Length: 92
Image (cartoon, rainbow, N blue to C red; front, side, top):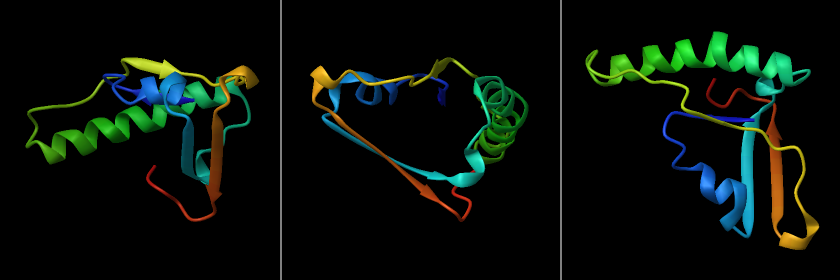
């Protein structure tokens, strides 16, 4: 699952890049889709809102504009998707 305000990074994730590599902190793993959605809405978005306001002097926050959920990849696309889990926290 990938949350985004504008969705600008989602195109290559979804289709155009022939190789996609995600490096993800293991603390981001959710038990199921419901828990993942809850984590995005109740933890990630408030934290990102605070981070953006601090970064812009309170002028700009964030929003959940797009949410991409990967279920499976068609083998006919010939893409290579790699997920690297890191035990140390990487972001929030």
